[in-house]
Image (cartoon, rainbow, N blue to C red; front, side, top):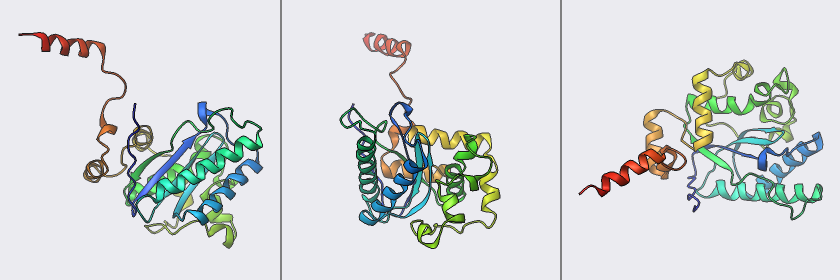
Length: 235
């Protein structure tokens, strides 16, 4: 099946993520996480990108990116992914043994409104949701920790948000999503749907050619397929 053309205009916020192939663990030690963060910094130098938030997890990672120009998102992600995969294979002595990532990165546009806060909260809350820590200040490998505990130099890779950062951000992030919020974000992750109000999402689907994300996945049910064939054969 041909790949769907990825359209990522500048001036729009995107939630981006990828996983290890077969949910393979990508990071085994602090050194692994730190190495990936260095790759982020290197890539930002070579392929400028506004990094609003991120979180590294054992077998996957999330980022919230805000490209300035058309094509910047794909350029940044390609450089980042290829560099990490190449170094990961070299370090683990698995050169030529197969893929590191499950495929192309996933991404979906996010409306810069309350929906933006929900997505960043989802990203930065990952360690709590996965029961890796009891307090987000204990998880070193995220924008949450970097913004609150990093030095001026390390915080410099984080770009200003398109909205004001709430004063009680820690309290907001630590509060669990409602079931509806959780399901809505997870649906966007699975399908690549825009995340925002109904009118905005409809507009983005038309603008970015994302109509395929609304269609049911998989092959048509056998019953429905046979029914259509019978109907078409009726004189």
